[in-house]
Length: 244
Length: 121
Image (cartoon, rainbow over all chains, first blue to last red; front, side, top):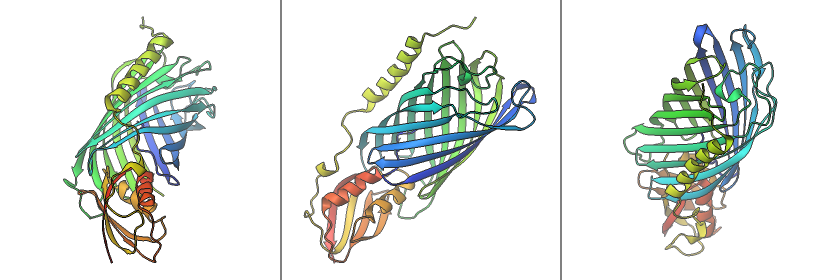
């Protein structure tokens, strides 16, 4: 999910994230997304994300390990509030907007430019972190003939995400440059104008050091109403984020 | 049969959540680096200083602060104490960076400079 922690001016944050989706009937999809985030001013950043897919789904969807690109996402994020309450505690709010571009190939994504707008708040209070994000995607095309995800149809959709992180280690920060370990829990939901929905519960672990972060997690469906997409059973996530 | 949402309903729901996010948290705008109360002189001579910084809440804050501070001529050896919100720095070479430039670097890193203490060579 997005956060309101933008990179500093001149700072580049590359992130690689792999997701393995396991659907009903032994179908599977591997997503490897590369995301570049760059700070262009104090409270302004841009990001680009391009997913690569490998599908082992039932025909006519991509099968037999077929590769293809997904839609590239280009976003601009403007932080509109930074309220630092004390040494550690902080509240940040950001607005973001941009578009999904029709870079998809081989039946992995749609073929339209879809504008995106949203807002996100991130709060850290001691060892507890909270994120909430709302995002609306205006789908301008006809969607995919054989959709894979709830967001692949011709309908506009809203994504609502809630996240909580608890710092497991260290109990308190000191002068040591040690990594922090967080237990994370997210609720990721998508609702389409056409009445489809998918709500996922996402427990995970985040290890964050001064120059890198590693994330591991699962996504478990808790509620869904789909129309033609394969039913997701479980998704596993592994990610690496660097700071330059 | 699936219940259908209109584009206006779904957009309104997303905007309601977004508005709640903004109204629930927005009390003041993004901190102006030049508005921080600083007890130090406008230009900082060579010496050892402790910067009091709010909002450093994760390990990557360390790298952000160090990167931004060391872009200022004369600032060396930044050392972050996150628990207390202190960043110690040395200023060398007679470059006398302004406290506004220090506050700006801290703000660029994403945090708020509250005070600058010290100045002992």
